[in-house]
Length: 431
Image 1 (tube, helix red, strand yellow):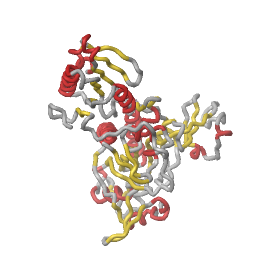
Image 2: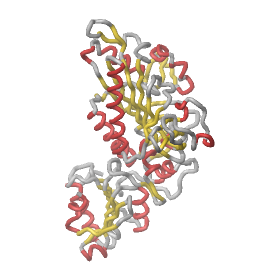
Image 3: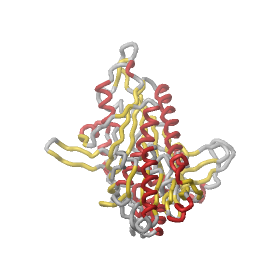
């Protein structure tokens, strides 16, 4: 439903493709998975494959907006690369064999292909064909694209799937020093992104795994259902993935173990990875044909590369793990599908309530505030329960008793605090 002023800022719940559930599906182990399904943000199509319903898609669009703003501000240029990738380019780097266990492969009239689980090969070949000289560097390109990995055991809803959306960026530089400078810019951009997404996170030193390269950091979000562990020292701030520490750790002997950088002790934290940054160096440019440029003396040199990933479709689950209570989701304003949820109570019995709610709906929309308007003919209890479950930052309640006093009740979802707003000052109060 388009708002009456012709904007997509507003939506009437009577028209919204939404069905909330009182019970979570049996396969939902993680609270984020339970709530995203119950609140009608996602629906499972197959193991590790999900449909994003209208509220879920708006949520993803807001995550993408935050990422795009910070990536563009850091000098990134958005592009879009193919999901369908010829096997030959993967054979060139050797990853056709080393990543064989997670590759989706298909045969077609055009040859043998993989569905891209990542895009290092493609971006290296693409930039190699476009960049000839050191004068064209540094360069940073990024995309927001679907990825495919044949996970043996998809789990936790959006946290580990076979189809997912990722933002992957790639920097190209003339030297190792320049690559490190580009890496620092991206590292700082990642911190701003996760700050804006409302996440408590820790950048930790990590192993590069199948991506390759030397220096890399995982941006870890503490979570009881996290499948990763990192060790941190509160004394000096050191943090590292347990594998990156170079020795075997277990929960029993890591907690309280010595910090490798100071006299402090380590604690073990279970966490979910929200992003990963890599200094790739020459890992791909040394293997992909023609991945070089002419330096100031006219000599051919390989690109020094970095790569930087954020799980876009994973972000709602990561955020939900940190932002919820027993009643439902609690979205930070930056990502919430709508800033305000407007509830009209008993409008079918009291036309004045419906008229007042309609006016507020129009005023907020005209002021540029995104509004989800619960105009359904259902009980107040259902509306309150759904509002808490859906998790919009602000709830505005229009009822007969408040209307008689010339006020609307406002509830802040994150704190539960309530106050009264004068009926003719609602837009000003929200803004």
